[in-house]
Length: 363
Ligand code: 1HN
Image 1 (tube, rainbow, N blue to C red):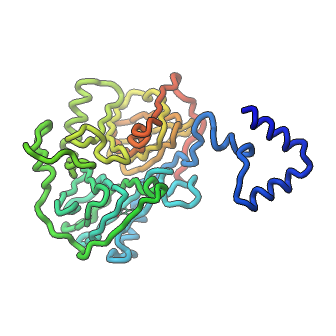
Image 2: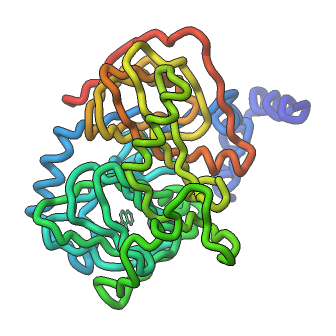
Image 3: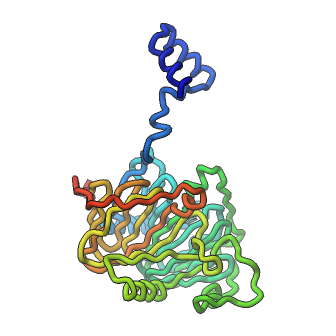
């Protein structure tokens, strides 16, 4: 501290200060004393902004993309990224999370490839689609969560007669900032299928595992988390706990740890009856409204949501939720990374936060 003070005293008295700063820049050096506060704020200063994307505005554009943009090698995926306006034009939803809507029409195939960022698919609408993950053909139904872990081959195939829309969640911004992105195309558009819903058959019952199996792999060996099971677990937990909200975390059934190492996957069921306690936590979250209607207040800004809407809450923002009818929200969060690095913090702020404005989706 003493030396920093000395230096800042110098810069107020010394005549050659501007010239000195020029000399530093010319040698690619930067003085900490001019930026200490931004680098080390007392509490996080996220560039991620609270934001909301409305289903009725996004879906028509996804449909139009379906008419205008074909998918094949080169195009590969028909994906619209939820791009946070705070992130300087980057196609990321928060500094660590990628959220997007993907549209796959009848008869279409999104060709097989693999990459080091991990992905999940949360199915919003449609039937008749499957994602093959390293030979395991995972059927997709609304509310299902499908994992395509780090470096697993995956292709998406619509054999039905209607389009499917799902939410893509990836750790791409994080893996990209760690400069660890690798990508490879599969030699074939569709990989060979070993069987259908294999991981589900292997983990057909809670707490039971095939004897003699290998020690736990890095990612969850369960690749499809069926909505019927999630729904049942939410209902059971609410019968037990009551209250305004129950929350589930998708876990690796072998370890109890997060289903994906680099981001958390959660399902929240909110009940009408008032606002939940206001909380802050480190790390960002992206929410996908599966069903229902309600509002979430983020740092005083009210975001009114309905089925299909997507919104993001930045790190350390004050957040509370209120359901107008029973609502189910899927969410991804970077909390597991923060926990693993001993950076996770959470607090309840006490009083309900005042509402200072309402997010205008008409902009
Ligand atoms: C990707 O491979 C998929 O496989 C979806 O469906 C979204 C976003 C960025 C990079 C790769 C997919 C993606 C992606």
